[in-house]
Picture 1 (cartoon, rainbow, N blue to C red):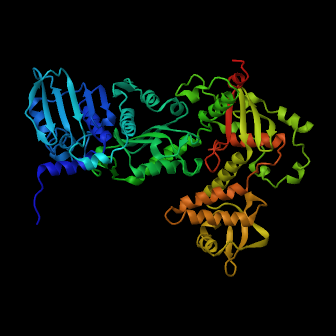
Picture 2 (picture 1 turned 30 degrees about the vertical axis):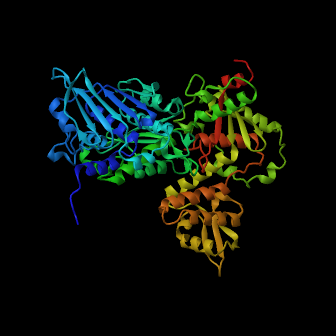
Picture 3 (picture 1 turned 180 degrees about the vertical axis):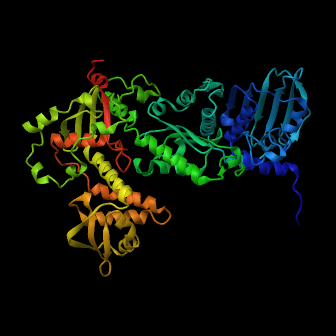
Length: 611
């Protein structure tokens, strides 16, 4: 038999969607305070929010008549009949307060400036009490006690007090970054855990307070526009990444969201510049007309739907990639980590990086040369001259420990002050290049760096002519990589041909390789084919064709780059540095690892106790 549910059950069902945990209630109350034009929001919690949560604001307040309506379902002052597709407030459904009141003992104290005194109303697990006068002088205070006490099953799903408090701090931090004009504090069991003072019209300063100097000091500024859509914010350097998506902060018209599609878009923008399983750190503010976005598609308003999602995706990806391409730096965290480890091992004082967010010593000093004009640094030695097999026989005669006289003379022609990556001075363990800069030193991973250069050259060839230049093998090579590998390789044969790899079937379980990308030179064809097949098997049809091509290109370029363990002379080392300066994304290899780390002279002196 079908029957109507009582209001108490309806409110509890609604609460299950809106109030998942204490942080969910805090989020709703913060958004109400922002809608009330508050300039200061103070939050207090006890026992992870189980026993007590309170949110104080200095906003416009609520009069007596509206206070009674505020605890009724779908009663709101923020939405008119015709506004459902053009919502300009953070809250609009009128569900938050009645939902919270149905699963807690909730008290609201507020004062409208037009009233002679404040008013108070109490809702005890869905039962609304009478309105009473209150001594409240300004704004609104909402107190929530004993959340889910009437729903023991829900209470069991809450995590530890520390975890729930961390969630409250996280949601407060996320919301605060979109509203720098508002001050926020969080007090946990009587101890102040977060203080974010107002930063009027200074979004970067607020983000620095919220996320730390490690992010903002190295972040890339974003400012892009398409039609009536704008994207602003900050994108972290690819080498500054995290193991989860928690570092991706997205806002749509000032609303903090956790939209999987947009998070995926942000990750896609970094493509081959960060390692697999790692995620970027970025703060993205997307603003567009409210009629072009539907925020009423998720119970907790955590996701949105765009009228033209493709344009938004393109805007985000292009803006982030342009920022990365125009900046060759690696994260300052890398050099500081190395410095901190060395200091710790030698018994010296720990560097500020290990102690928190101090920025008094960043540990990395970026070269004081303009990166924006890479053409002036480009050498006449092309990437092709650095092919691993091109002069292998010649290089065997070079000493592994010192440069020849001619090489030294050549090295002297490169002055450290003239180039961002300085002048190559030595090669360590036939793997790392040490270069002197105007104010410090740079250590370069030769294989990682050249791998990126080869990849970018192949991508440039494909962009210019539609294909990567190929070269026919004098004797076509037969490879037997296994039945599954043969199937996936032949399925993608047209795509591989665009990348300069020409293959065809050759009996059962084998393929014939006729042409290879010219830039690769002599390489281990069998292993390259096997690795390419594995890439295609891992990135199946669930990935776009372009994504699969990017992964295969990265694999191919790995086989065309200078290997660790190969000695390089001064000319080759300096040619590599000059090509890095003229190549976008040269700060990261194809797998997202850094290609170089920079240390300032001051930091080196600290290692020896000179400072």
